[in-house]
Amino acid sequence: MNKNQLEIACFNFESALIAQKNGADRIELCENMPLGGTTPNYILGAKVREKLSIKMHVIIRPRGGDFIYTDQELTEMKQDIKQFKKLGVDGFVFGILEEDEASTSLRLNKERNKELVALAAPLSCTFHRAFDVVTDVEQSLEDVIDCGFNAILTSGQGANVPEGISVLEKIQKLAADRIVIMPGGGLRSSNIQLVQEKLNPTFYHSSAITTTGEMADPLEIKKILATF
Image 1 (cartoon, helix red, strand yellow):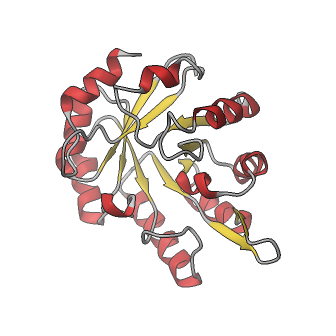
Image 2 (tube, rainbow, N blue to C red):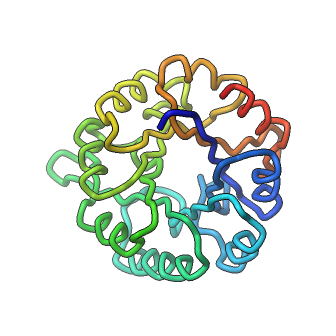
């Protein structure tokens, strides 16, 4: 990737339109911001897809909380991918972990992630911020690549992107050209230049929300893009 691009996390229909109007390259559609984003309603997805000409990825996350899912939740995730594929979306965002009972460490559940990546094919798949709670960052990077994901959305295991910049810098170098490392989590126009100084051009992820509520701020989107 030879230039920076911007993905806006949108929690409602209006934010998706704001993202498109103000120059975003792509949106990630989700709902329930307080939970960190969950699978959006299908009707909302259809409404957004109809109005958007930019790319649209959809988060597949049945609930908030941890990223270890039951068989029933996995079935629900599969059904959601099948449904949203019919809408002509451009990609999906998800991530499934498992716990090593012996060490209580968290790692990718490679079998389940590969199932979902195969189901989503040929569409792009991003491994989301479940990456920020894995125990072994370097091994998890290799596992994500092996599962066939196209990108990792991560704050570098920090509370926000600036705090995780050293990990982001490290995994971007390790990833080389094998996968896109997409910084996201507390990323705003006020701190993005600090991050850009350390990273090669990439996709950046922000909700662009600057006030209470769940609405993207058009001015904030323009300010972020002005740093590219």
